[in-house]
Amino acid sequence: MISNYCDRLIRRLPPAAMALALFTLAVTAAFGQTDQGRISGRVLDPNGAAIPGATVTVTNDRTGDIRTASTDDQGRYFVPALKASIYTLTAVAPGFAQREAKAVQISVGQALDLDVTLGTQEVTGVVDIQASSDAINTSSASMSATVNTREVGGLPVNGRQLSQLYLQAPGSVNSGSGTFGDIRFSGRAVQQNVVRYDGVEGTAIIDASPGNLNGEVPSPFRLQSSLENVQEFKVESNNFPAEFGTGTGGQITVVTKSGGNQFHGSIFEYIRNDALDARNFFDLAKVSPLRLNQFGGSIGGPIIQGKLFFFGSYEGYRLRSGINFVEAVPSAAAAARAVPAIAPYLAAFRSPNAVILPGGSTNPDFDIAQLAGNARTDENSFAARFDYKPSQTTSFYFRYFR
Image (cartoon, rainbow, N blue to C red; front, side, top):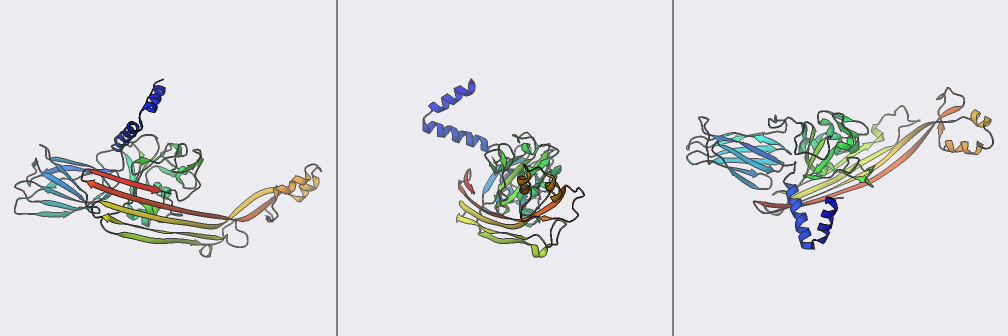
């Protein structure tokens, strides 16, 4: 009854009010995004005492975005909602020397504790901090794995499927072909997995894939998420905190690439060919044909320095492969004993191009037939993203996948 009343109320709202309501809901949901990290800690003097009122500045080295925070009476500071990137942290306080921490790496959803000690006024300190995703997370008991930019681009993944990198998380098991709908975590059903892109849920209704057919059939597409468009991602496989929801399986948070203050681009091609393969047990006289080409590129950079950035990518997938069917079919002896009514249908069990494997069956009524065919797959993946930051407190982004 309450649902019906709310539905009627929404229908009576004028278009402007409805748009405002939807915008408010979208902004409210944005606060619950799980793809953002944070830096917290204490600012101390050389004797280990807290320094209240110190100013901590965190600068994104890639986009120039600046965030500031002040320490409380206990010398603690907190800088939330940080995108996955490399940062420079600067701490200053009256009567103390400035302190910089460079190369501070924040991974997707990472909570980094970083204490800063300020020296006397005459001494200025600069320290390089390599905060990798392997750092121990003391703020949560969750079991997780973070795959950074280097691993996304460098790990040997057959077919460049993002889902196969999920297997780095503890408790992950490949229950099929290694696609999105075949990897389960800690024994839970694959339907309970959740995939989020930049904090927005992209999971299908039933099969836990980011793309499907009619909401029920698992998607056959391999390029649901091109690796060229992924900056890094994190998999929470067990004991994840209450901020995650929707499903009880693995919580996959993907951060897509965006542009920065410098232009960067890449081109690539990955090749597999039957000339490099050996004949397997089921091949006939020769190796099954195989031609696999994955190619594409990406480019990103500034449109307005420090304000507006763009990133675009393309990936193509071309597969020509041999497929084998091995089945038991009625033998000539069985066909000779068949009644006339079913004799015409026996030919449907065997393709004219099938080959009978000698000695494949010990039953005189059946033969083992093999049919070698060819499969053809063509796919194209496009992505574009625009980031706009009109002020230090407001930012927008637009992302398009196809």
